[in-house]
Image: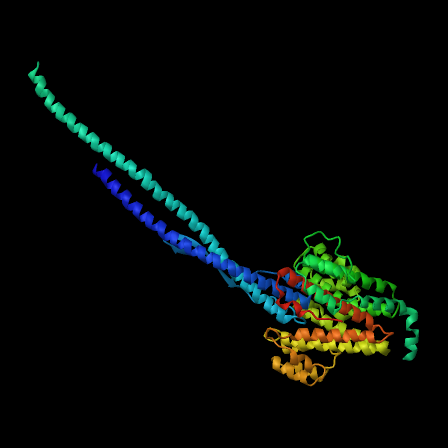
Length: 197
Length: 350
């Protein structure tokens, strides 16, 4: 029975710890949600600016798409994968970095170089924002999973393990009581049998 | 000189009349005012239907996109040009061929970069400008490097002499594609200038002025755009066309320039270019230098139609039509993206 009592104590402690973890995760979750909303609004603005600067560049140069598309070799902006730890959960974070020199330095040399530079800047900003948004969204999904699992565990402990242990405990107590009564009865009975041969 | 004008109409009278008719259909300020007020691309299509363009968008499936409008505008201009080219005789047909060479240069540069990166040839051909197509275009895929490309194919095109003058075989492989493009264009401008000076008369009067402006404009823009890039001053001066007013002193000064103010100082010496630099600036609300150059070009080209019996009207017509396409596409983009602040930035023509 001591063993069972120990187990009950352990289960209760585990339950409170997990609840704390679930709360911390939910807090972080809400923060990320707020950030996602802000970033998405900003994204709308940035994409609009970028699309407009593309129109400006097209006005001066003509078909700027082909110049870019045909000259593509390897990516100039790359994404690195890092892990961030929150309340024991490792969240993926994407970080962008520039790799190599600018292949399109001389694009628009004879026409519209300034517009091309502005275009590069605007779309560069858009790509950075996209990378940030991507890390926020993956973190969101991962956190969501983990929160669900943690909550499931909390509920399991609360509604299944603890009642089971408590049931077992009360059964043990009642068994012990009954055995005690039986002992007592047996101890009483031989006295009676000796009396009645 | 006068005799030339007397005999002009024998060979070219029909075509001059035709091009003047086309010029009459160029959109006016009132047309642009109507277009600017459109709320959607469908409105735009409706307004364009009442101009010379007619129902050119009639068969397009909805929803209409800006790319479709752009393609159709270009198609109309190409059809008009090719009709005139097909009817022309010497020397007008050589003149019109010269006009197409600039598109050919762009196409070839596109094909070279595409082949270098192993893109399928059929895809590249559709992206080429129709005015610049030449017979050997389909055969480009047999070449793997630019040098092979040159030896096998380009040598048969009319652009071969431009390659010969300035680029050697190793250069083709090593040089940045933009440098190749600009070197070719320089050779083309100088050759066109030669040809027009030989034609004499009003043609050479107008064309030489127009080509001088084009050459000087390129020199200015290349200089300004090369600040802060890896292009050295020597390389830069090799890209300046020598047929403009800036040659030789202005070009030498430009080659030495290090920033925008020095370029401006060079422009101060030339009465034509000084006012262009004065009005331009990078603040919002200012016209950019490119806009000013476009405006000046449009002015020059409109003046071509003030005189008769010369070939300059054909060149001017193509340039004005191109500007009109750019204007319409600009307005269409502003309407489609609902970004109306800069919708008036088109260059009015007539």
